[in-house]
Image (cartoon, rainbow, N blue to C red; front, side):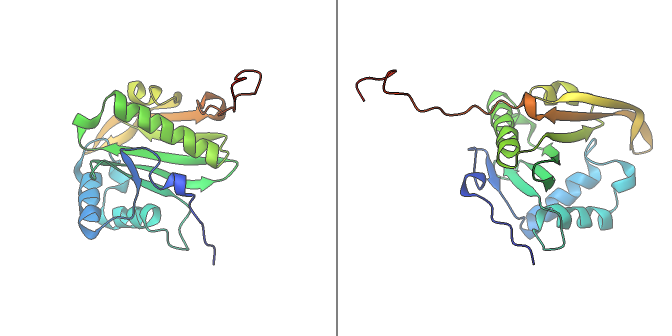
Length: 190
């Protein structure tokens, strides 16, 4: 049995984000969002059996599931999931925000800080994410991602094809800054 201990600074690293397991009601809300909200999941993944397996895989912390860190945004206004984390290598990310009123400079800054923190704590070389939403390139650029590729008509929702955007954030794009202690020469009064 593998037991993963989550460092305390990852439990609630930003005011709007808290590490979560989902209540039964939240699981139901998330399943409905994934099933019925445009841009959340492609047709090939949109059946309740697959969605429930997905939620179990990324929100349960069960021994047989890959290591993931799911965060609740606000009072369950969305989720930010770092999925299948492989330390010193990579992970995927899913950001779903159903309370669009929250999107703004504060949430963008906190999300970017979260992403940078996860990259630092797990020494990741990159994080990837994808979306069919035409507005996603602008949003994820603000989080430090760049377009890795665009799959023409790669995202199918309700039988209609849309371009699928695949994004990547590489370690060198991370803004985590080292905290340096001042020297006595810089602050002689110490």
